Length: 330
Image (cartoon, rainbow, N blue to C red; front, side, top):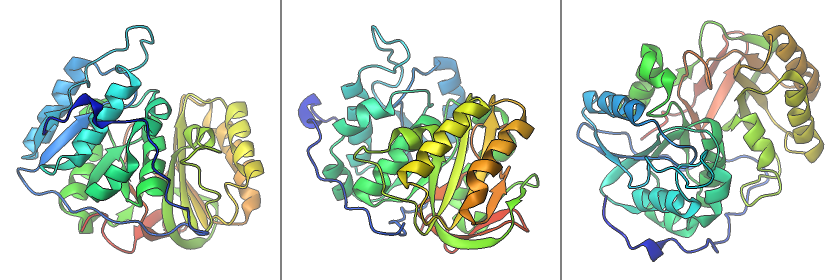
């Protein structure tokens, strides 16, 4: 990546893009070609070096040229759950995005920390640099929302380079690879486990991610007023049923779910027995009167499908699929 002085990341003062009254399609980036440079960043937690190396090897097998951002292997001197300082993590993301030789930015892992650094990014500079591929999930949900609200850019909710699922599961790898190189081949998304929680069919624009992070984004510069007209994709990890109830209730009370067209549900790893989780989801989401598909196969699961955010598509509970109107990448 092109070197940029440390002073290039001032405290963010750019005005967020005014959210539309309904969720609208976002600008798509270009698909990747063999030889493309891909920057790896760590906006959240510290990254195990051996897992990072294994993930980079997979990218190289795809004939990509991974470039590791300067602070990916950092650990904060006092707050050991962070991959270095907030300003360093923001600088890595911004410099990678604004480097014209970089075609994609993929996160190394999740954890916690995006909400501490997201407002240090110069989102006017991100908008000016234009769309490129961005991949991550979990804590990275806050960046998906920021790219949508502050820059008007579509992103990919998908596996991260040093995540165990990406390293171990062939279907997870292939879902991301196909999305990056052959996006027209993966316009229909969903595992065989998917089934109707609330039957129906809905059309809208995809958004969402880790539900606890979406709730934490309320009343922030990333926070959208509602999911009106959207296909909301939700998943999480390590949240007991009563905490999921609290999170979903907060989203309902805030109006964040007003006007949502349909809901797709991913994995709920370490959230308790699924029958208890399912009861919460049915209780809190069933009253919205919109189609809901469960167990679609994205998020913190053994197989984590790549799901584009910011694109129009159709959610069908009978087939248990999300079918995009257009490929994720142009």
